[in-house]
Amino acid sequence: MPTRSEILDTLAASQGKVTAYFQGLSPEELERPCTASGVPGEAPWRAKDHFAHLAENERNIQILLHLTLNGETSLPGNLGAMSREERLAFSNQRNQSYVNAHHDDSMETLFADLAAARQETLNLLEQFTDEQLAAHASISFAADRTAGDLFAANAQHSAVHITWIEEGFRQGV
Image 1 (cartoon, one colour):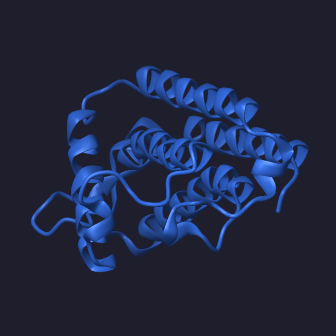
Image 2 (cartoon, rainbow, N blue to C red; image 1 turned 135 degrees about the horizontal axis):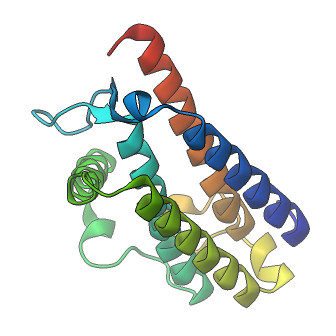
């Protein structure tokens, strides 16, 4: 379980890497398709789409963290009743809808949105006690992770997307 200090360091280092990586891409690279969409029939994702997705993903993790903070043990709505495959399809569609809605946003807008999402995460972190960070998440499908692990998941998720972009560029998706 990462400590509060480790979480803060991990999130700051990740934000720095993400910022440097995406600022280092040319306008052509930002627009270049690099991975298939998780939704059949949708256009491949561009590097810019992956970047837009990072803010939405951070906010989705915040939802799990809020549920954990409040002691909730199940996902809202009918998500808890869905199979893993159904939740994955739902998540892929939600991600695609978000990317579609932000397709034409400028990089400046996307950077500001990601910065705002990160600030929301940091504000949420302040609400957790050290004991709560060390406790297992209350949400059943994330129960093998601590709340602190969920905070750090944002950094891990960003790194995975950068890897996918690089692999897509190499493979010429």
